[in-house]
Image 1 (cartoon, one colour):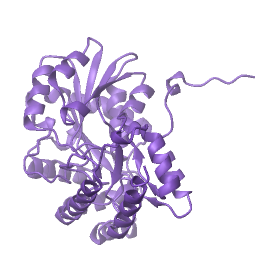
Image 2 (cartoon, rainbow, N blue to C red):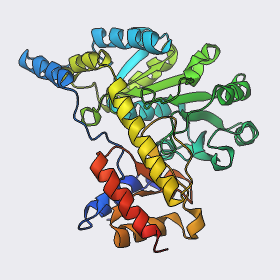
Image 3 (cartoon, rainbow, N blue to C red):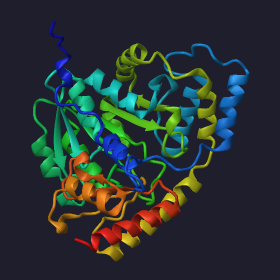
Image 4 (tube, rainbow, N blue to C red):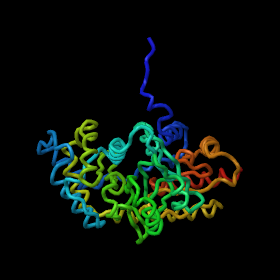
Length: 378
């Protein structure tokens, strides 16, 4: 008997990030600088709030989209911190930003619809697009300083285009889209029936005062989905909680997929999320900015070119001058230099590697020392 599978799985592979990280961790003595997860534990007040919620017996089904008081807290936080006005009933509390992206694209896409994804980009966008039977369309940005070239975007948009993904700050480059870039994108899409998916999960980890989200363009509110997460700025990766905001008719379509995918986010973590929103992220931001500065300085001393990230906690140097493909470079450096970083091809960009600054100072120093020694052998 021959079994058949969902054809949407064709071409969708398991995460290269996870596969290479597993390879690095299985390499005896290797120093791993691959995963984008803060090395710090979740702040104690947030953990205490979850413990108190459990002690009070908060173990029953919550409302599908989130507790009313958490939705209200998110609505107030977004307006206070970022000037974005979404009512509580325009917000869904999700199982991380991953689920938010999945339900957004599930609600938007029909088979054959195209999603324009500026690259380098987190591979999740293309994979979820294909699982939703859409077609990912890469929009390379390496030759425009990782900003979006308006002529290239205009050429990439076709009658089949259904959505554009914007990630700012970007993973893996740390690039923050300028106001000028966003205005050019807005001019191209303003009169087109194209959704914009704003993945703003690194928004609290920005090192420039001039930050803007595309969600600020309120004249396109009916086509914007803004996604965020507690994972990065509050060191809550293992909690798996995020949220998404959209104009009410869009949100109502998305909540159908949310209800049948996960039902709801666990009850007892939601009180902790309110505490997180009341917790200052400035210390976390300052830590990662200092690490960014240290890593960039070391790479420059090695002769590696890297655009200074304006947000997130990654550095994305070019290794093109060594004349080998990125996967070969990373595998050789892991085997010969005992340090693991990620090939840029996992993000749709040949000739670059991603270094995560999420690790402690000692691990970063050791990893960069090993990287420097390896480069001297080439």
